[in-house]
Image 1 (cartoon, rainbow, N blue to C red):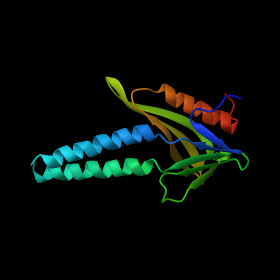
Image 2: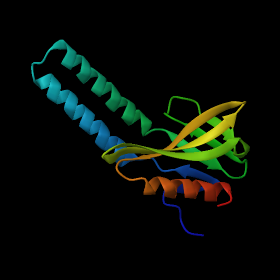
Image 3: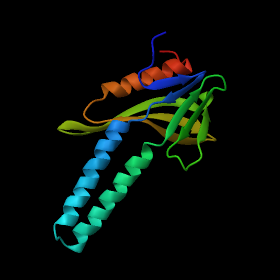
Image 4: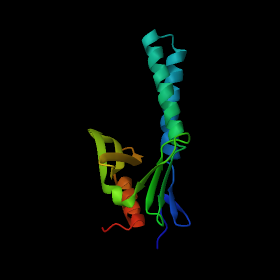
Length: 153
């Protein structure tokens, strides 16, 4: 069995590695943009936008504290978006399919992989992984999850 690139194994529980580099770089970019706007004496609208950039940066930093676990013994997926939110659990039986979506403006600017779950008759989307410019890493993440869950290829 080959080692997983996006997950660490703790017994029969697989924990997804956080995307620290992506979130840190985007948060630093937003904080830098906020600082640039505040150092220039711009109007109140620009300063309001700077505050929003700062809030988005904080949200990205909080996103790094989230956990995504796959418990093979219990056949349960556990998703905790940030550290102060209680985890939501989904059964393997709730799984419907993966969705890889991308936003393209001449080039792929943002791509995300989500798991579509059907829990209590409602469709839920779990954000699994994001990337900038490329979709191939998203395909590898979904293949790893499918392998861990024992889904047919």
